[in-house]
Length: 103
Image (cartoon, rainbow, N blue to C red; front, side, top):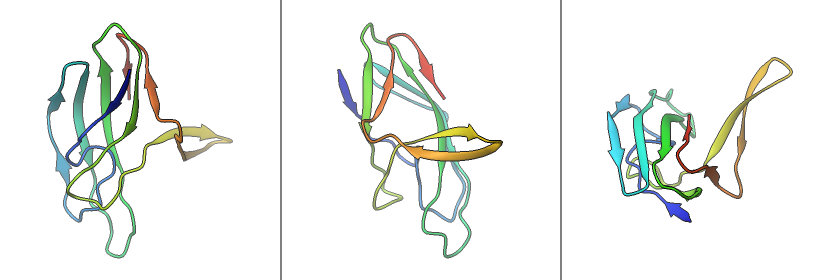
């Protein structure tokens, strides 16, 4: 199952104000505590954090998102490499196994 989610200020929000919400729920997806920090003036992108739980009995793949706060949203994964935290785009989307959470 592929899922295209509409997330208000959840993944990446280009906004000068701090944003947070408690949760968003759909049939198969539960998004808990999405938030983002303010971006410094002139910074071309921001970042958002959230926990996504797949409450269905089938794997889902998050292939896109949108927000009124940004012209575009891209899905990235944070990872530690050689002692440095970096972000890597997930070109094929983010697969969340049935009954599991991603954060």
